[in-house]
Length: 227
Image (cartoon, rainbow, N blue to C red; front, top):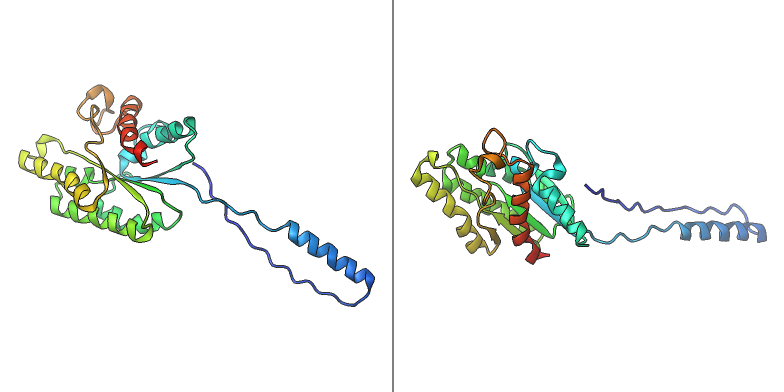
């Protein structure tokens, strides 16, 4: 992760106790020192926030092995001047994401916002209409703070053991939101990884480092046009 530089403005009160040539020289010297200490302008950073749950956080793997970390490596290797901010929190639902998103996006400029939430809603059997409502509210909140932001929504699916009707209704949430809110869509974040035992940890949910490499490729295909 990169660190942010806060520019501190210094003000100096110059007091001249008496007049005379010696004091004038001292004053000139101090003024020259002050001018030399004027802070440099800091250019706006190009930030990409990955906002999600344990998938984004990289549960069970090193941070640089997770798809957000791999995306930063690729950006750097291709000389894209973007800073990836991993704002993933394990266990996050769309409701808890909505409660913290304002705090996250107000902290720095945001050029691209990758929204990866909903999976935990599905695993908990939360009503699809609630997930839909929360995701829309997150998008609205981010845009209210950063009107020019580009948003990439990561589509998700739930296992069939949640019930066929529920799984189908859940899957429809993401493309509908993308269409209604005019945001970009990753049709299925875990394409070629979900359900593949060798690409997931023993829990069958979270990708291994090899699985994250595939997820990173899926993300990149949809992220690159936004850069």
